[in-house]
Image (cartoon, rainbow, N blue to C red; front, side, top):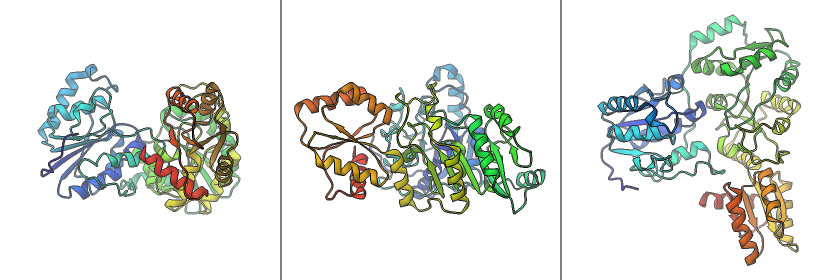
Length: 475
């Protein structure tokens, strides 16, 4: 990494080009940039549809629309002339520093071609990490780092201690649209408006319509409840199937009928947001709407993608019924769709409507860990310590499995894939044979696996989790 000489930075370009949730999680980075460079002119480059997320933010001096948004990831040659033309436009603005939060090859080349002197980004960016002279390698898929935290890590080259997180804030509000939609659907102050976002990101799963209908029936049994269906155009058919089962007064179908600015305005009206892991989940959280998030895919972990600092309940099954290594975008199995039932969601919704969700950071963090940590205690046959640790963790709601060290390697890999194991606690002094098996396991499991070999001072769940977290963040 090039040593940063701390020149005077007058103009900064922050590049953000991916999903809506990723845009939201870039907002704390804006606050930190202005703290480090308070007098600098800050420009945000974003997609046209994401503009309302940044609009009205007093820390942002300028928003420019990303003209490369339509280009395919990792294919800069597909439209090299468009890239060069946009680079000339960026160069004319004479930026001193660029920060790219998404590891995209085309946009990495953009900063270099535009001649920006100092360029911050992920050195692991495919074929273009070399363009970042202030780059660093982010642990993007590390299960114990939230994506919002990973964004802040980018500033380490210019501010080693800049990791104090300022909660995302969205200032955009379309008063005219709020008045219009309230009048069109006769909203009044007594209504309990529940937003239900039908879709999810490509890395997760969502329910079939019959499950969504079952949940809505339960919700509508409560007085004054009205359900607003939200989602992109690709979910219009699904929304039509659902809304046909109810009156237009009870269920208001807004799927495919609102842009991001209007979606923000709709969420501001709601007392509860029910959603799967998705961009709208992060939008609602930034607006401080109580959030009921359903995580179905075992590959999606709240410690990485949970809704940030809003009252919340996350529903995710601890033990997976699916034997496959999780790859939600291409998976044809629907086993994980059965993990969370409409009745469970309804019960959680009642709690949130009564302000009984998780509110403070420590309890939210603990809940995320219980849903994200998948721990195997690897022991020899006579280890009482391993059994005590397993029982201690399980009694406090953590997922912990007791596995013997002589278990066949193929059985281990099958178990690790099914349970998405991410932390292996090795109990006792391992033999050479066990070390070899561990080496092969790490090679063929092909998922981040943190190895613990010691013990905390006392065997309590809190001490164990503190020990694991310290270990995890150090690896």
